[in-house]
Structure formats: structure tokens, C-alpha cells
Picture: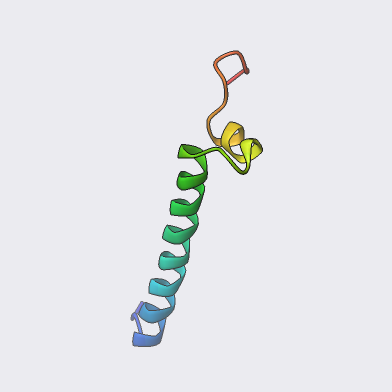
Length: 50
């Protein structure tokens, strides 16, 4: 399979979007002032069944 330049650019864009989304979710988890639901979805309490 040959990797065309446009494919590489598209993969780079998708990977960048994933990094941005991961950074945003991580930021929300670290500072849970706005949305506590997302924080507890990613970082469940110890009492919750894992």
C-alpha cells in the first residue's frame, strides 16, 4: 500500500484533532469546575464498580 501525500496530510489532521480532543478532556478532568459528569465518566470513584 502506497501512502500518498494527501493521505498523510489527512492522517495528520485527524491525529491532530484526536490530540486536541484528548487535551480538552484531560483539562476538564484536571479542573472539574464546569462539567463534573465528564470528569467522573473518565475518572470513576473507587466506590463505582470498575
